[in-house]
Picture 1 (cartoon, one colour):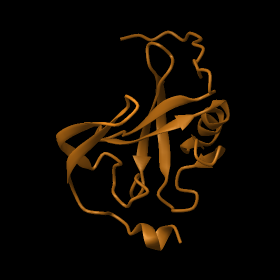
Picture 2: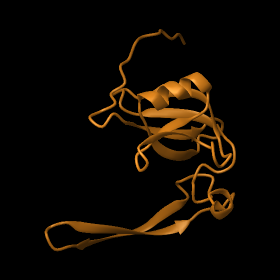
Picture 3: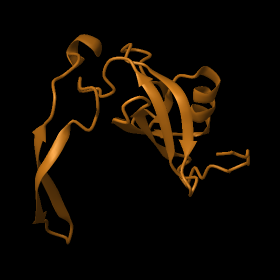
Length: 142
């Protein structure tokens, strides 16, 4: 199989962000989803460590800088529409800030929708938790 280099313009959208899925490079396990801006993508490429944009804090962050639960990036891929990234990573510790290896540690068993006044609705899911915590968030994020 051969490959050819070509330029692809990443579509950062109106808010300047694209979703980035972090996936274990060896097992294929999906670890987390976060958002990346131009600076985060550039820092990831420069350092080989996963960088993201925190929407809640509106700032750049390096995964694991405070917790030690780092992501060494083996490869970054861009999807066919150039509006989503895939980080193939070597994860140290847990990827989820709640202490689990993956942010996707809950399986949906049921879905209920309740109508609210004003035409909006609330969706609630019943979940089963898979696996054990790999660290205690209270010890890491004091």
